[in-house]
Amino acid sequence: MSTKHTKKVRIKWGRLLLAVFVVAAGVAALIYFNPFGPKEPVLPPPVPKLPAQSESEDIGAAPKRDDLLIRCVGDIMAHMPQVNAAKQPDGSYDFTHNYAFVEQYFKAADLMMGNFETTFSGDGTYSGYPGFDSPEVLATNVRSVGVNVALFANNHMYDTRLAGCINTVNVLRANNFLAVVGARTTTDENRSAVIDIRGVKIGIVAYTYEGSSAVRNVNGIPIDPNYVNSFRYSGGSVLDEDLSAIKSEMDWCRANGAEILICYFHWGTEYKQTPNAADKALAQFAAENGADIIFASHPHVVQPIDVITVEAAYKEAPAAEPVAPAAYGEIVRPSKAVKPTTWTKTVPVYYSMGNFISNQRYESLGSTYGETTSRRTERGMIANVNVSYDRQTGRIFYNDISFIPTWVDRYNAGGRTYYYVVPLIGDFSQNGALAESGHYNRASSALSAMIDLIGEQYIYKGQ
Image (cartoon, rainbow, N blue to C red):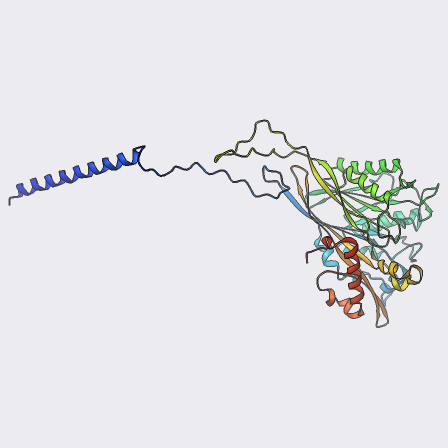
């Protein structure tokens, strides 16, 4: 076969194959584009996924939040047996070991507050009840173990008169507390404080009750109310003019940038496990006027924790909730949606955190107050409030409202007396102080009593 003939055959077969391909492609196209033929569904674009949120969180842009751990203890007292036990062989004093087992909880907090129920007159002589005057190193030691805000509003703040009160404030300031709240050294100073904690401004207001008398006094000692924060009871309630003064201090904190506001009150009936009506009313007043957390002490025993519910205004209202789609498709927000203006705030109230450390206990008070009441004075707590603050809206989320139960152990060893604050969480049977004293059962009974009074739900669940 010639070369010319071979080329003609190849061309014919090529044309035939091309024709077959064109016909097949046409048939396939007809089938695919025929509206009556089989067709894969074309899905709509997916619905935009909103960020995960808690049930209490408003829908909208993800908020910028700051988490803060705020803790507080009640009365840090210094009876003379405690002072004597802190005396060292060289004549100096050291109270640091009293807090060896709670120091870790102090230093873990962003804000750690404690009430100094004593004075530092600076004259070199010391005394306990009824007129407290302690070694100044107590302030140094308490600051070193992690307390960073000193509360100084209580019925013993004037035990060494105005001069001692002023010197106490100066001593506390000299020990670099972030704030000293409750008294001042001149009438030109602020009565309250606003401090910055990790970028969040926290306002702190502290007040003590006064004695009942025509003369303004605390612990029976006449006071100059220009130097101390105090309020009076009359007819079973706080005087209106003193409520106004408290509100003015709270307003001052807000005006000076406070984003979270804490009130501390020294109030209540000694040795009673329940708050009285006047103090409940004051707590309600404080919550309604802007308090976000309320801590309190004085009765020498712990009292229940409560929560007051109030409506609070947003600093900047969050976006309104989007309209739910009627069908599969995009979310469409209403053009004139009404934004919320308030949120429901649950203000924790620690009616009494009790003695944090003292010499009040069964051994010293049993013959006067009986076993049941005297053992209650050995119990205390570290109040624990974990919050998230939304910078944009001003809303506070209360992540944890709880307390770490504590018990004061006192025992003798090697010719010396020792005081330790023992945290009653986890397996505290291995606590070093309890192992030395043999007081585990006594501490365990104290925990059971606090659970019965305050409730298992408020026990701190962390480590």
